Picture 1 (tube, one colour):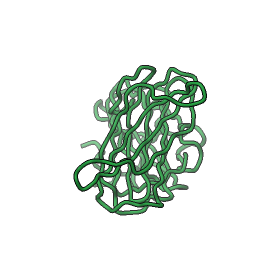
Picture 2 (cartoon, one colour):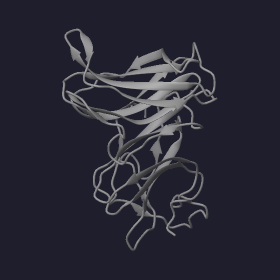
Picture 3 (tube, rainbow, N blue to C red):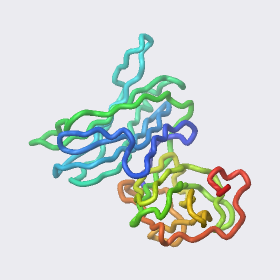
Picture 4 (tube, rainbow, N blue to C red):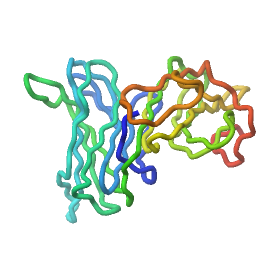
Length: 259
């Protein structure tokens, strides 16, 4: 996945099962914030929705709060260009030349834009979120985008973890937990994963007779997903139907294990 500059310590995870949570209708499409991470030196936003024009981009503006409560523009950046249809991508705004203090309140504005002539123009209303900056540098972090080719058989939770133990035992550091409803497909970006790390994706059924966690394979190799510097807009695809049941004991403190 594409390299991001963010921290795993304080991440504003606003993940939803299928579409970004704060989606707002626009004249030509939709945009929403799927997740945010703000640190002293960078801010990273995963945004998604649909676009109807041939050439589009996402513009991110980062504002810092003043002592009087107002906000001033601190830095901004734009995504790569993309075509019409569904999109999900992460944009990093680098302000390492003028870092902010830990705890500084920052506002993130996300705007869908379309090409008009030789420039880009706003395509409808923007969406915003506010978050305090973390107290760490956010370099050398990546994203992993997951998409399913089918729909969840029952309601449950999809987790993404780095692993250090048995192949078929859900364990390791948790980087994302995504709720999914029965009959829903999944397309989400999880941010804050160390670049070069191998992660695994598990589905925990919340209903039904069989609540054994299922390991969801990646399309490139059987079980693991890599957090790399490749384009984060190209997701790993997996399938609920191809999930492999866990065969080792679960961790005693696993919050998603069947009770």
